[in-house]
Image 1 (cartoon, rainbow, N blue to C red):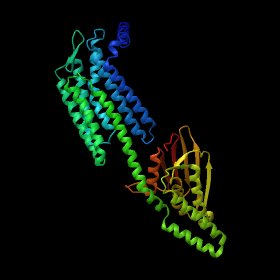
Image 2 (image 1 turned 90 degrees about the vertical axis):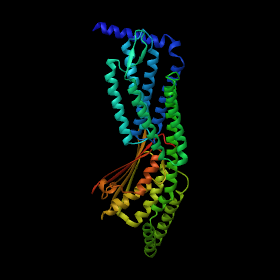
Image 3 (image 1 turned 180 degrees about the vertical axis):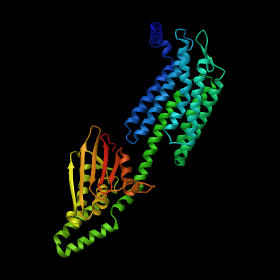
Image 4 (image 1 turned 30 degrees about the vertical axis):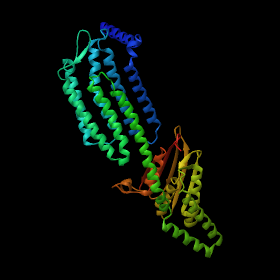
Length: 439
């Protein structure tokens, strides 16, 4: 046991000396390239963490891809570094090449994972990766994939062509998945994506055709992943901008329902007979309400939370005049020094009143709360109305334009919308706004 520990310690020291004691070996051009690849993966990881438009699942997928590419690049580099070094144990060289051949095909899949959800092609690729892993495990002790001679130079074994066949098939399927992914974009947006594909494929082919003389694969993979991130972020932004622009007018019109206008005008007409002063006040409130809605047609996307509350209060004045004591609203505002997307708070309060407490004969109460956490601001709109079963309301691909539009506006700036409801007990709507909001 002590002898094995000693051998491990000796090997570790030799590896350390190989890395740190001989800068001529470690800092050649390819070592610098691998360092650049690793730095790019770190930068991409940081960018992904800072991007609040990505969900936790999407971020996790990106991070896994970055780690896999980094590990695969390191394994290829170590294989070249150890080749012919008699101070390195032969078994360690074989182990490094084992991980090299396992991780290299996974690199292509790591890129695909960032592009699309589950598909048949991805299932086939995963199956091929499993087959490759089994092949490498079987070949490792037998020397059928990698052989190391007495001078510690490694060479390919008899089953290496089988690995190349699997690797080539994986790359081909990755390219097919790239093309499928590109179809989702408009024609004039596909050119840049296919140029990225050509860049990555060209770098890999150049390395394989040159027999490894020109080590370009991981460099172009890293550059390609940077371009893909830019491509994804840029066209996600474009699509979001277009969606917001298309829905903006429709959203305002959906907020000013004909029945709501008729109800307000009818209430004003009745009050003119019984209470002219109240009629005048309701007319002023209704006018301000319409002004707020029409002002939302401007290009302003983010407004102070305090201003959003003012819009809510104007709306509540109208509803309190119409429904009297049936409606009660309680504000608990502990934080208001932050921004929210326009047309998000008021529509949710309207929903709480219209679909929640107004469906109860005795009415009810709406609570509007806001508070601060370490990394986010939280807004809660709680009502004790009739509530609903989420499966009945949101199931079966039903569309809810108002809620969907609020979600879109929140996602645009990294916010999140959560809805929880229980039939006959009420509904809680929670908005989470990150503190590093993009304006």
